[in-house]
Amino acid sequence: MPHHLLRMIDANLNRSSEGLRVLEDVARFLLDNTELSQRLRAVRHDLAREAKPLRIGLLSQRDSEHDVGHPYPVPPDERELNIKTTSLQGSLDLVTANAKRVEESLRVVEELAKLPEVSSMLNSASFEQMRFTVYTLERDLISRISRRDKIERMLGLYVILDRQFLGGRDELDIARQIIEGGARVIQLRDKSQFYQDQKRKLLLIAQKLKELCSQADVLFIINDYLDLAMAVDADGLHVGQEDLPLPVIRRELPIDKIVGCSVTTLSQATKAQAEGADYIAVGSIFPTATKKGATVVGVDMLKELKRTVSTPLVAIGGINQNNIGEVVSAGADAVAVISAVLGEEDVGRAVQELVAKMDLAKEECQSQ
Image (cartoon, rainbow, N blue to C red):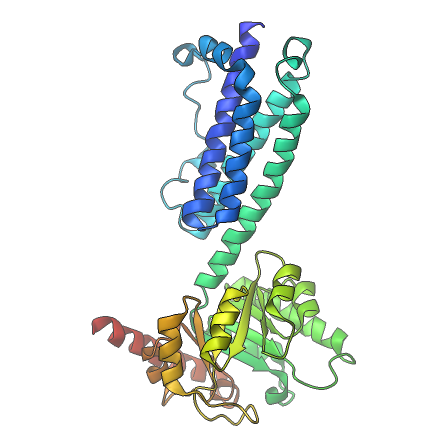
């Protein structure tokens, strides 16, 4: 086989293997995802097995010192990849750059394997299959990194935009005030019995809220309605104990979306975590007038869950300016409110004051 073909194959196999190793380590160390890590390792092993017949010949023709393309110039958009790869954009860039490197290299080997001089040693179809597998793995890695970022942003004040509590006020106007006040999450909730009749109207409202939240880098969650969450590309869905089961939701919802689940007991919380909940809403922490018949679990339940589950906890129910500090001190990652914001004449100011009290409580906890 001509030495130039061996050198081309060697360079692209090395490039593919190196890129796969980076992607495997992202799945292993950044995402702690066993399944993705194993799938990437399987591709890397398949690559090594397919190249085995040429291994000695490839090594004999390797001449890195005189390779006119070595060292390769680093494109401007890749120069900062190793500086802060734990950030969302850094992680996405790292995956994209290495996935493209693998895909392009596999395509080169795939085409070279079709040549008469090479076809008896390498199977072009095998490299094609590996390339399509990497396309899928790239999508899954990107989706899971995006989902992890959303989970990590489940912090601060979580305002539930309950349409029945709004009393006819404009959802978009109230949402703007909530965002300007400093809330980090907005949930659209409509518990009316006429959802099917007004689905089109609710869809239009949700679309506008999603756009507003995206521009402000605020998470947008839909309560109850899986179809609506998917239709508007919401950041996630929130469900209760009587709604669709978490395994069903997790199967239907795109990988990059988060799912929250309301609980009142320790067993419900551990079950929700095991079934794929990305955050757990525990409550009612205090008596509340916004949900009739709500079970009051108290701050002690929040403390117990903090010791038991690793999933982010959102405290909800009867929380206001007078007790929000106590809830934060008990371990809530986020605090969900309705009346403490929507029941005030100045919505933006109410949000600001709640956020300020949360920040103060966190500072006090850190100083202890």
